Amino acid sequence: MAIEVRGVSKSFGRTPVLKDVSVDIASGSLTALLGPSGGGKSTLLRVIAGLETPDAGAVLISGVDATRLSPQRRNVGFVFQHYAAFKHMSVRRNVAFGLEIRKRPKAEIQARVDELLQLVHLEQFADRYPAQLSGGQRQRMALARALAVEPQVLLLDEPFGALDAQVRKELRTWLRRLHDEVHVTTVFVTHDQEEAMDVADEIVVLADGEVKQAGRPQDLYDNPASPFVMSFLGPVTELDGRLVRPHDIDVTAEPADGSTAAVVNRIVHLGFEVRVELTAGDRDVWAQITRGAASRLGLAPGDTVHLRAVPAAKSLAVADA
Ligand SMILES: Nc1ncnc2c1ncn2[C@@H]1O[C@H](COP(=O)(O)OP(=O)(O)OP(=O)(O)O)[C@@H](O)[C@H]1O
Image 1 (cartoon, rainbow, N blue to C red):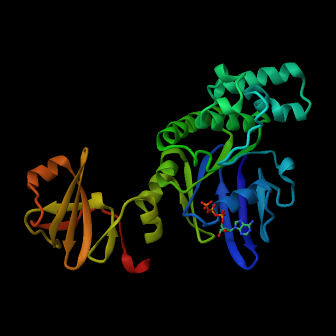
Image 2 (image 1 turned 135 degrees about the vertical axis):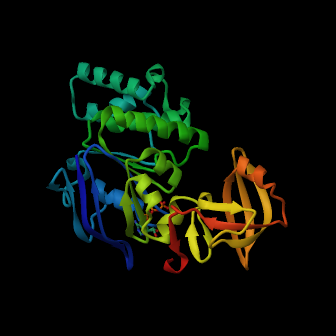
């Protein structure tokens, strides 16, 4: 179901946390709310869920004004970072919980829970207790529980935030696949741009309570609306007063039209790529080049080289920051 957030504002005391926020979330999409800590992501998610009431503006779910509806009546599933499972209940009972309180017939519950456990690859753990699962398995159980009642919308607040990097990566791939199977409109909060780029169809960049930009990951990366978005979505460096992506800088031994001389300080080999740290005038700058390019140039600290942004490079004036 599509979600429309229209002109939502919310303050806690005198502090505005959401300022006239409007967001369109397409039906069946997987959308990331991405931004720095304290930017208002969780608050926006809670407003969509009905756990917070906005001071102004509206939330429409599937075209219906849900602003004054209780969370229960919005038909949303919710998963938090520190998911609280029922410790004394088996995985199966945890997943069944929402269906049991809705007094669904036993056979239906059993069939649905089996299907969900399969979907989240926990069928062999059905009779374990939450304490006997790994963190990643517990989060998958939380997702199965949220999906059990067939929500129209799934809202995930840093669902993998507390897990280590490797498990996070596995779970986000898994979430993407799950979403491709069930297509429930999903919004997840993250402060990790790589996670957002990897998983989401759409990214909404939220900072200081405002939507800084929204769009497809590649579009935001290639055409950031501001230096803030550009630096939030990937590495940047400054060359001649402009922000550019370090992989968009050409490093040459000889000067070229419009190039800037720079002195090599340090060369860092990062597997396939090489990070070259330099000083141009009184400014630090870095370029990311391939191993092949680095060895062709025969770079060494103290060398003077010449830098130029490649012709198609996206760059923004630093003064806009
Ligand atoms: N119930 C509340 N009462 C008072 N202030 C709050 C409340 N909830 C959130 N805030 C404040 O609102 C601001 C935005 O918080 P929010 O949790 O929405 O940000 P966030 O982008 O999700 O950050 P994080 O990534 O750290 O979770 C913060 O400054 C926070 O301290």
